[in-house]
Length: 565
Image 1 (cartoon, helix red, strand yellow):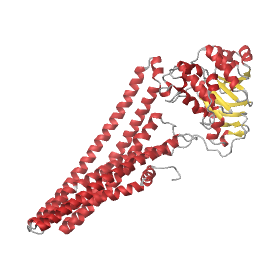
Image 2 (spheres, helix red, strand yellow; image 1 turned 60 degrees about the horizontal axis):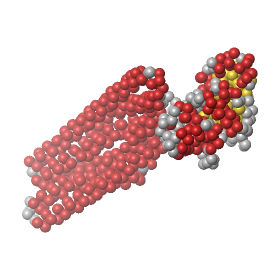
Image 3 (cartoon, helix red, strand yellow; image 1 turned 120 degrees about the vertical axis):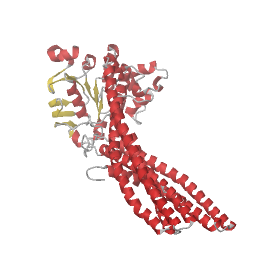
Image 4 (cartoon, one colour; image 1 turned 90 degrees about the horizontal axis):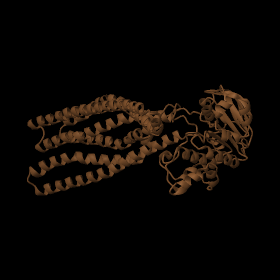
């Protein structure tokens, strides 16, 4: 792989290299098909000269059998080569989707920076399909060139001028076709970018539909999507127009070329230089040449669009990681001691914080951005601009991101659920090693949610858990985080949509379940903060106060207004 990351050319070569066996097999069969098809006019010409012209029934039967054999071979080769070529294209696209998924899921992150989820989906679907189509199109290109070569040799046998006309005329024709395809390539890239952006906006609108309705902002959202969709449509129309102009121009050029071959052949026949059978073969070959040229036109267009898509895929694959890959192993066992020194990132300004192993610590922040930045640094989703975060004396920057996240689980407030059963959603956090998720369900009061569902814990939830209420989703998401049972659990506002009675029950059960394990509750909930060992108040990106919940309520006005307001 190139030092600076994969390029569009690398993506195309990788797609073809992974499928070289299928592409090679499809190419050989497609070349055999085109060679046989090119020989059909030649055999017809020989039949006229050696059988029809002489009145020989034996010669007629012989050449008809040869013609039947040609059709049998070409039809068989076409069916098998088409199957191989399509399989190669689908497999190449699948491999590209795997590479994209691996990059997006890389623990170091970075692939989603500056990209909407819908845009990444468009790259993994439309762009991957277009690049995969190169593996399907290449056999057709090779078969078309084979057909042209066989036609040139056959025409050389009929007449040297005709053969030379094909041999000398095809290369400049192909070069002109390449030049004509450049506008199509540029517009195809713009089309895919606009389509990806429109997909991303649509996905965001669907995800936030309930919020938009609650705010009465449907009109603004629809207007935004309409503007984005119109831009995507205009770009698609420009690309379609460019494709039509490209195909029409290539067709016109090839038509003129074929007409010249036919006229030269007719002129030679009128002068008696070639026989009637040779004239029929020359005219038939001239008409046949339209097929290979149309194939080359199709392949040229596919390659032009694939090059644009390959560049977009390469941009994702070459995205710089958001965090570095550490090499220091996790301490064994992980006790859960956290130490933050001079942590600076976003709204955080030199934050110092010590969290004892096994303690339950509340974190209250007046600025939601500071709370979010703290979560990003603890979850190793972003490298801090300054300072360090240590786990059991080891800087998080020295740990592999995957290892760090297994030790410190950050459960974000907006965690999504999967389109699966409630039990499968909770077990997604526990893994195969902890099949009993009953205590986690009870601690998060998610057992009540299961009891209210028709099939209990086996009830299949809708996409993102939309079949549940907001409070029910929060409880299931909290149960999933608790079931994982990490050494350090960081939970962000897990009960904002839960009633006060249930919230108090969750606070009591959560502390009991997490006994001996380090837990950070980033929240302003009085019920949750009352069950902590110590509460840290953040203001202006640093620690403004520290103490128990009752002490801070009694002595700190800013804390009291943030928690009890």
